[in-house]
Image (cartoon, rainbow, N blue to C red; front, top):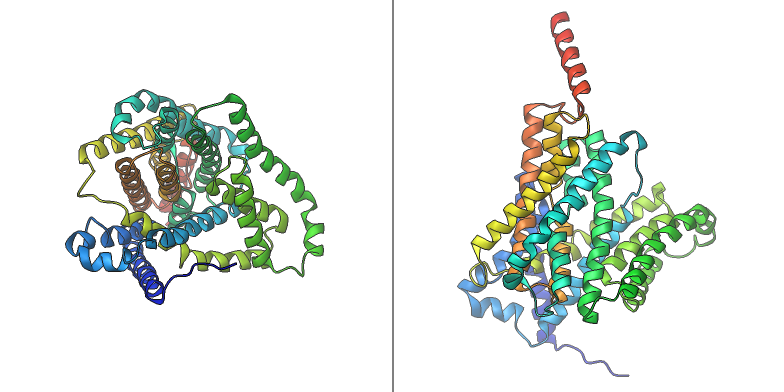
Length: 436
């Protein structure tokens, strides 16, 4: 068997392109971190800087000689793009916690329904308004409609987690509620996205196929939960196996295998991450290994993935600022309004309700994954791809700055969620003040 290889010049061009993507993502990502903004936004902006909205527009021959130096370079770079997506979803699956604090069950349920189902239902009448301008070459109205409503409701776990860590409010009742809701929300929305990709590839919606895909998706989680009870026994038996090699073999083979039964690569990688966590556990040794893997992936593959997302955006052509503004206001407004409506059923204080409404709008990584997967399957066109990415970036920035502003106004705001808790802390403050 003889494999066709790249010439030395093509290899150098590819390595140069990767180096520039990584450097631009790193520089802009670091800049945004210093500005207390989500790093992912900067990494995408690094790609935009290199693409048709900036450098490629100004110096097409020079930039083209690096990123378009040979016919198949786009496909070669796409491998790194897909690997970045796979590792992002694999690590997201490993860090997923499907657990509910029963004492906080009512608030979690209200936020989940308000931030997921209400905005999705309210977005349905607007699908036909945007469809003509945003639908992709797959020309599937049902698949487009699913992606549209998902884009309105999706929330990012990684971006929110990073913001919580930076603010020092991780493991508070507020952060635990947001992350729990986001986990269940993303699980539901990934299932819908998987259904959308199956619809557009099959060309039609068959109820039996849909039930089959959903059953496999949910069934795998149920099986993994049962398997995890015996994982400590298996772990001892498999201890000699190299953790990384075994994980990567399983990851790649399962992605290929599940694709054969209609589950896309993105969701398959998410499932494998969850399986690995259930089987090998979360002990100190395993956590250390996953942190090392995460450090490498978030230093190489994932920034390149985000930069490649950005480099495809062209804000100078095939883009309507008016349609972007309309979709952004619609998405942000419906997510916030749905959350606020359902939280009226709880005893949370007014400022906490507003904080939940804004926080659930941070779309981050999942919003980008939604856009890239939908675009790659031809469900949406390049304009809606651009709109979804910009919506993700702007909503994540707003959520991050809003939470920091609220904390600056009141350092204890995320500790006093209910009206009673707020009153108790206020009374305690006055008591301490008078004693002083």
